Amino acid sequence: MEFSELLSALALKVRNQKDAIETEEATKNAFIMPFISTILGYDVFDPLEVVPEFTADVGVKRGEKVDYAIMREGEVQILIECKKSTEPLKIEHASQLFRYFAVTNARIAVLTNGQVYQFYTDLDSPNRMDDKPFLLLDLLNIDDSLLPELRKLTKGVFDLDSIISSAEELKYIGQIKRTIAAQFTDPHDEWIRFFTTRVYDGAFTQKVREQFTSLVAKATKQFLNDQVNSRLKTALGGSNFSPAVSDESADALDSLPVAQADLNRDTELETTLEELEGYQIVKAIACSEVKPHHVTHRDAKSYFAILLDDNNRKPIARLHFNSKKQKYIGLFDANKNETRHPIETLDDIYLHALEIRTAVKTLLA
Image (cartoon, rainbow, N blue to C red; front, side, top):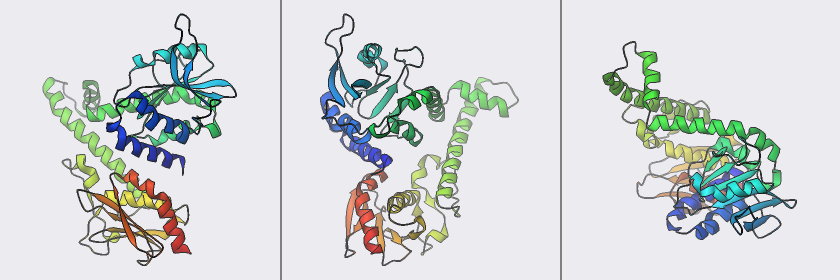
């Protein structure tokens, strides 16, 4: 599986099992050890690579332990401190990391609850762990732009110098992006004033502030809509996709009908964004076996078909997304018998990557 697919599979596990995990030890076993082994590529059962309950005497603090130390050539490279999945991460949780960072050769420290991974280094003062992470990975909200940097920490391509050199930029870009995201959901007065004073010539009174609070919120939502629609249009190859989104529907973009007649053989059908996104995932998986233009789709009243060479007799998969209670992906065996598999989110499609690729291979044979 590709690096992004492995992350998606682990993210799905976290999403499905998080509520059932009640202790730190269970969090380690269910989420963090798979992250170390599957994502970073280190053997959690080889003490030459991963040392659990790593101990290093620190001043008067004797016998304190860090949950995991990742080793390379006999030297500590990454320290990992774990908390249970139900506990939000706080810098106060990283006391052992601060102390151990100063007395080992580690340049990377990780604080995690199995869902969120905060990566730290020593940008502010040499051999002293920073107060703020340079990289923040949330498995339930993965920022794809971070994946190339995360990959540098994996066993196969470990590149500490490269990630340290880009850490400062990552740190500030990440903080700026999170600040912007916060303004889109709960804009601060400074944010509202910034835009208001650029489009309104009068005084910024309390009444004006109240008026422009809603206007700024609507404008930012419409801007996000425009960006999503532009990216989707590009993904569809510059098609005629041009949904009209009202202010009132901006919060419900996922259920927006797609008004694109050439996607449908029956003009009464409604193809949803979710179906198109599911199609793009299946297509991306199938393209390991066939060129992208061979993977096509047709909508029908009861399902959304994904086909090889636009041939109804060559089905790769079907998306059964019409029911509000349960969604399914239909997959086919060698005799073209369909089996429906329930899915909760689009990420679940990645769990069936092998069957999708096998279906394509069978159709090509």
